[in-house]
Image 1 (cartoon, rainbow, N blue to C red):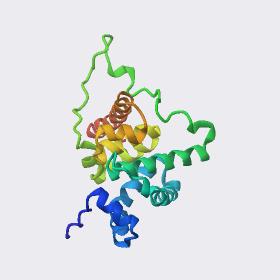
Image 2 (tube, rainbow, N blue to C red):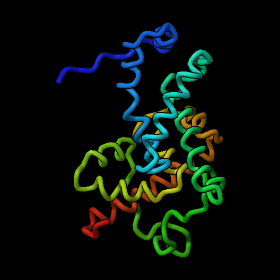
Image 3 (tube, helix red, strand yellow):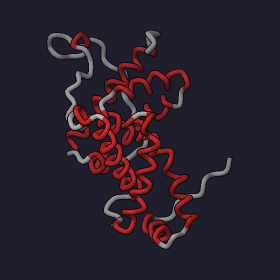
Image 4 (cartoon, rainbow, N blue to C red):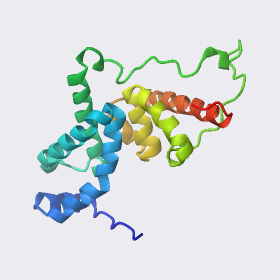
Amino acid sequence: MPNRPSLPDDMVLVEQLLAGDERAFTQLVRAYHGKLRYLARAIVGEAYADEVVQDTWLAVLKALSGFQARSSLKTWLFRILSNTAISCVRREVRSTAAGGLTNEDVPALPATRFDTSGNWKTPPLPWHAETPEALLASDQLRQCLEETLAVLPASQRMAIVLHDIEGVPMVEVCNILAVQETNARVLLHRARTRLRAVIEAYERGQGC
């Protein structure tokens, strides 16, 4: 299968888009639509993912003239998607959506995993940066992991999808989520821990 042509430099692409170049817009959509939908589904679920992505593209077209390359175009797109998705959540679940987006207080692992000194009884499997993407490509584990991702708090899902699956640098993850680096690392750690527990159970033959 031939490689997809690479996108031009961000500012060059933006200039082409502002000039009404339909080919440039087609390139942009082909490069990022799937990624945006994946992130949207992680935040709002399958039912609203397409609506959020559609609204995101409309917002991108309206805001394009204001892009100043303070971050990458990819980060800028993810930030718009994130804001659009969170607005959707708040509209649909006004009573609960305002909380839980940045400071969830969900226990990562049961206390029985630690001894009285706070040390691991059985150390967890090592976590590698490439693990989530590789495991999501596995048919046997994909369903278990996607079900786990679906029940994580929204900001934990966003953190791990952006950083570990999409490869967005931590500083840009912080910009997208509008949180400090310390908070972003806590969110990422909690998400990784939950997924790690699923992987451990699966590899020990315990299923999901």
